[in-house]
Length: 351
Image (cartoon, rainbow, N blue to C red; front, side, top):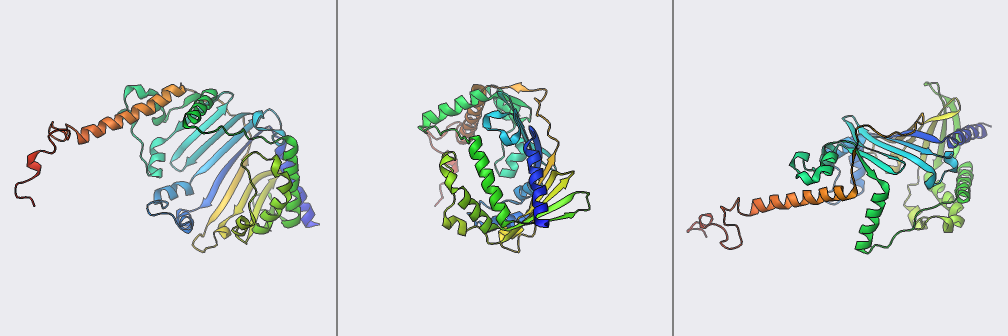
């Protein structure tokens, strides 16, 4: 009876969530820099491509907030039904990246300096760019900028045409196939997942779901294989060889329910690493009140031509800087073209 009761409560909580037209949630890695570096070492990165201390620290403290707004209930929505999307990545030091898609426009702001340092590729300062790079300067200064999504799609299509890249079919999944996939997931969960429920100290009711990961994934894909032809192009189920690489461990997810509504999910992923070096690795999803995303104030409107022109101007600026280093300014006005290096650089007694 406990198994049925816990599963039903969780099912009802997800049904409530699916009936909302706007949902918001926060993703958070419950980990530390040491565990992330140990996890990176397992992938055997190439020399020089290892996860840096700075990036590991940034990732361990990062939180991603996502909001989606649809004309229809989320469970009935297709890609074209969503009228508002927002995402923000923040760390202890502040917001790194934020974008909002509202109607036909994308709003964006970036802390380029912090992102560049963390990625090991520092970006140029806005004050070092030429005047014609005005749009790019705004981006580097961390200001809100606005772009027309239709212009972006057109520019991307033109670039792909110039490079000879064939256009990819738009991903689509009809409502009937979505429902069949959901039913396949529910059948698999009912067979393979053990549920338990208990009251938590935070006033929420906690439903824990435990399952052998490899078995769960294998059973799920066995269920959806008959639907593969209905999935968007490029989506292929894993092979038996792929499934053997899935860790054969039990994974537990903790679902917190308040007043029958899903408030938080915690999944312990440390066992997936299969090494004691990864001491702390969890994924947390926190639900919050869904508020439709709004356009920010103080926005600079850009067009793709201006933005691409800014990148071109920045590249030309770098080339000009290179000429100064290797040309007349450093080589005493003679350069390399005719006179070569000055004679004083080669003492007569040089070997």
